[in-house]
Image (cartoon, rainbow, N blue to C red):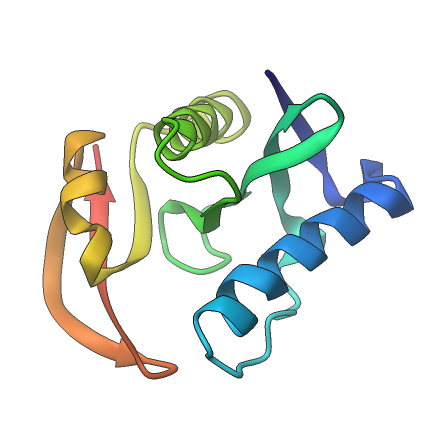
Amino acid sequence: MECVIKHFNELRTEELYAIIKARVNVFVVEQNCPYPELDDKDQDAWHVWLKDQGELVAYLRVLAPGVSFSEASLGRVLTIRRQQGLGKAIVECGIAVAKEKYHTDRLRIEAQCYAQGFYEKLGFRQVGEPFLEDGIWHMEMLFQ
């Protein structure tokens, strides 16, 4: 298993295609949630994924402070293979990238409410009230 870290301008066409395909498959198709997946934040993001035998198996992006929130943030967190610890592994990689690239220990995320316990185990805590976004309940969570 390899953790790959690339800024948008370093991505090869095949890598970008695999990332977009995974995000659309999980967030649009699987969750039956039609929304604009491409939000003009990818160009400023660090893209982080786990690769196993050449295949993308987990992904997230890391955004600088000021892009989505005043803090650095993680987003578009997904795993292709479930129940194998890949979610924990990719979030830990994302936290490390944020610390390295943005020199911060504070991260804000918008987590789907069903994943609250997962993120709490990784050190995030809920801030604010749950809200509906694209038909799915979310909450802001802070890591510090």
